[in-house]
Image (cartoon, rainbow, N blue to C red; front, side, top):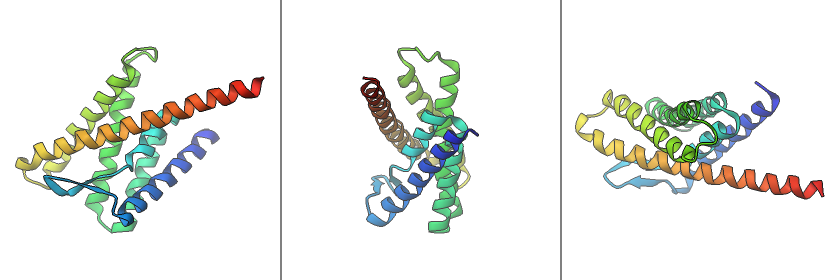
Amino acid sequence: MKTKTLAGSAILGSLVIVIDYLMKYSGLKIPFPWLPYLKFDFTGVPIVLSLLFFGLTSGATTSTIAFLAILIRSGDVVGASMKAVAEFATILGMAISAKLLKKSSRFEKGISLMSGVTCRTVIMFFANLMIISIYLSPLIAAFNVIQGAISILLAYFIHSTIIHRAHLFAVATEN
């Protein structure tokens, strides 16, 4: 790993931990109305940012950090595993679409969003079949579509803002 990638992964991994603990202990997690044990949060945003800035290896690293942070905080192996798998599936879908598309594609972000959400939903559908009834699967799929879209859209917004600001800073320092 390059030093820049390693440092960026460490920073975003730390942010995953901070967001996880903040969301848990502040009560800011929003329960999914039909299955209240599923909760919306922003832990996936730094994981998607890891992918966007540094690549799939960095995203996998931050997903692993999320798993460890949740496991240490809660002691819940299944919950921590499911969260890490869901977030990794999201960035895996995004990475696959990035490999298949040209960077200049006008629809790159939209296709990335759809493939990330689709990959997350499909993988979590099958992962959840091991622990819950198939009758709850449509609700879990709906939750994963919404949670995946939240993570990806917020990460794209933050990513584009940082890139724009960095460009403005670079232009200002040249003059």
